[in-house]
Structures are given as C-alpha cells and as structure tokens.
Length: 276
Image: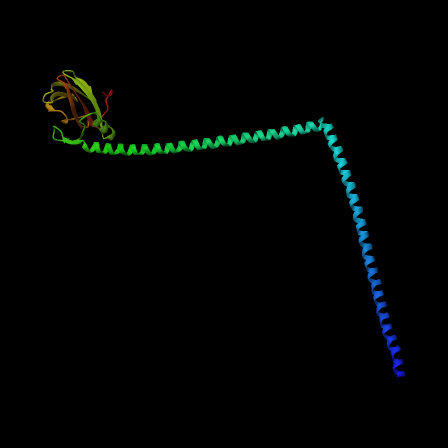
C-alpha cells in the first residue's frame, strides 16, 4: 500500500506539468497571433492615413480647379463684355434659332413630300391618259382599216383597173393619208374651164335625176370628152411627158350647173404651180 501512495503524487505531478505546458504553448501562440494582427492593423492604419492624405490632396486640387474655372469664366465674361444673364440669354436665343430652323426644315420636308405625291398622282394620270390615247389610236386604226376595206377598186372607162375609189370626203381623206397617189379636189361650174392639178376641166352638162354628167378634159394640148358618165365612175386618161394614168371621179351632182369630185394622179406626176 505504501507503494500505491508514492505513485499517486507522481501521476498528479505529470498531469499538472502537461497542463502547464499546454497553457504556455497557447499563450505563446496567442502572443504570436496578437503580434501578427497588430502588424496588419498598423499597416492598414498607415494605408488609410495615406489614402486620407490623397483625398485631401484631391480635394485641394478640385478647389483650386474650381477657383481657376471661376476666374477664367469671369475673365471671359469681362473680355466679351457680357454678364452671366446675357450669356444665358444668348444661349437661349441660339436654341430658339435652332428650333426655328428645325421647324423650317420639317415644313420644307412636308412640302417636298406633298409635291412628290402630287407629281406621282400626275404621273399616274398621265399614264392613264396615255393608256386611253393608245386605246383611241388602236380604235382609230381599226376604224381606218375597216373603212379602207369598204373602199372599192373599179375598172375605169378605159378598161384599166383603177385604184381605190373615194365616194365622199371622208373616204377621200383616207386615200390622202395612204399617200399612194396625189389628190386634187374640185367643184366645176357649167361652161367654165377650170385648172385642176396640171390639167383643166370643163363641165358641159349635169343630170341630177339620173346622176349623169358630161365634161371635157384638157391635157397636153389635147381635149378628151367624157360624155354621159356616172357618179363615182373613174374617168381615165394619160398625161405627162412620161404618160401616167390620171383619174377623175365626180362624187356628187350639186345642181344642173355644178358638180364636185377629185382628180387622182400618179405619185411621181409633176405638181402644179398652184394646186387647186
């Protein structure tokens, strides 16, 4: 039993020493951490102080810049002879001028757009008119072709095949537009010799009841008598240095003393000095 009592104090002393050692280590660690934290804190305080110093410098620079700008603005106003109110008024005037110019530009653009629309409308109308004209021209050409088809080609009193014969003024206009021959209209009075083209004609007799007539033709110093001929009958004869076929057609007997018609000559026949 004495041995057990001796071992107990020894065990107690070892545990105590271990606890003391651990506490010392903790204290040393705390001191190290505290020292490190203190160093970091000092560094942060130094950086903060430096930043504060820089802020103070920037604030001073800003105040100096503002002061210089104020001085420059005052000097500029003095050099221009303008007050701040005058400067503001001038700026407002410039803004108003710009707004007025902008309104003018918008108005001009609107007018231009309206004019463009009007021109487009007129172009559309012109296109419609052109289409109508084309239609009318096509119809006219069709009518002319139909009218020409109605014209007759007959044998003349000399047995020669005549060209197309016009029976009225409208058909004669169609023949003129064809341009195949020369045409000279006439109205003859009884017993009055009248130049027509390069020849002369003289009405001798007219019978309204039977639509017959007699006339004399004077050409190349010769006289040709066409006796008791019918209305719209081609009366043929040759004339010229290079004889070409001439034709006379009487379309109407106006009275016993007057007839009307036309003379047809080849295209290359000489033209009269004064065409009748």
